[in-house]
Image (tube, rainbow, N blue to C red):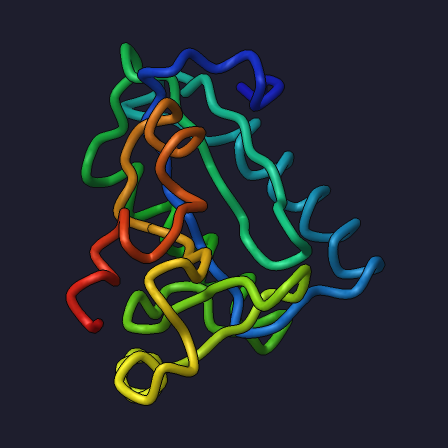
Length: 159
């Protein structure tokens, strides 16, 4: 069952999928429709899951699941399959967690982890650079610790 992402409790489980490029307005509309359809049918052992999503910065698909209705291994596998379908349809990477997204002004940059490490070493980015911490697991963490200075994230170890 799809619900408004904002209505999910702070304890909701969060999955963040970062794209290696921005989506066009048409792609965003299609992804919105497809994600709503997927969440409407998403179940765990036949029980509908209460989930919502949002698309941030034309680049991040964030799916939230109300925790009392815990997803099982099978239902998580189904969600990963859905994400893989999006990857194929739009020719993007959404599952590669070894890449870093960060802000350059209002622009969202996307780099391979090894390139980000080099940038940190060469001072092309700093501890003040706003990064996206995809290790957050709950909606509360997402709200408070997803978009943070590198100094407040796992990225700090590269400086």
